[in-house]
Image (tube, rainbow, N blue to C red; front, side, top):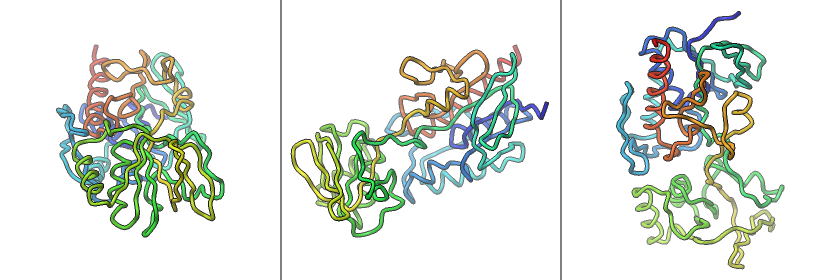
Length: 322
């Protein structure tokens, strides 16, 4: 058999990075991380705008850090700098551009990890920390094929002087809206009548921009269909009105990658959501989940993901010593 790892971690976001760092600090000698993209923290790089504020206490919910990673309020850039430093630990073996396809239990204490490139690895414990934003939720109505390049799930392809429609009611939607409003005409559409999921700081910025007429709100409305009108989206709203937009950005959250979790021997409930106990353990065989994939009530909290890594590694260590 090939090399046996103590802990194999799937995903190099905050939860995966924390799991690897805490594992090494707790004395595990053979720790490996698999990441399908070319660098760590891919979601932060893709979905966080430059200089985005990053709060330790996400959405105003205070989190007492339990582990060994000193994380504080900062920006996208300072957060990435912190994680850059952590992943350079020489005791952590990391494989980037290496997507895991499946995890299979071989016997009582061994897992076989198979990658998309058909490579095999073996480990005693598995931590899955793949997040949910990598698979963004999409609208139920059809997007005109001729306009698919202008229907986006982040703002990386937006330019200037466009008439933009941002769809969603969370922090990402609000941040997209007030960031793009500086150089574009922006409308924010949300199907509910108020923004219950948005943190107070973002709400302050949003309503300040609305008051200055830099953002137009469309609340308590659904989009019923889209049509191509000479290269623009003709958007049909549930109140019977239509409006033309150059581009649509969807910020509808992410969904659990069910098929992947099933291939990784993860136990799911009746709603196909992962099951975890107080130690973030999915089953008795040594599979753990960290970060948003662990069904945190505060999706997007980096501090909670860091705590997950500490909790998991502490539990694995204590289990191995009893």
